[in-house]
Length: 152
Image (tube, rainbow, N blue to C red; front, side):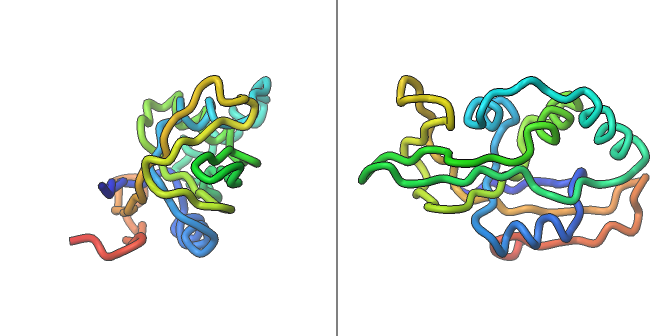
């Protein structure tokens, strides 16, 4: 199953650059933070990103999870980037966001373990997502971008 995401918080260049490096999937902020290495949030960075979005700006990089294959049917997050961006989006009520998956990209439904976890808990790899940007009242000149395949 393919998910379509309406993206209002990211630049077109962030999405096109991410698409050239791997697969864009839909993921909740909660799952992303669970899969990433735990850390204490930097309040200054979060405040800076929140001010950027409040001023009508957009985030210039998609959160990323790099995945490596650890056995025939098991994959584990090897690296992450974007915990602060994800926390800001979660604070704004975002429940599904684009995430760049790079490295050894597993098929949808494959068991996936978090970076700090040792297979006590797993989730399953989501399927690919399409993304769509639309003009909003505060950003009327936002171009429309197309994702992995054209949207209807």
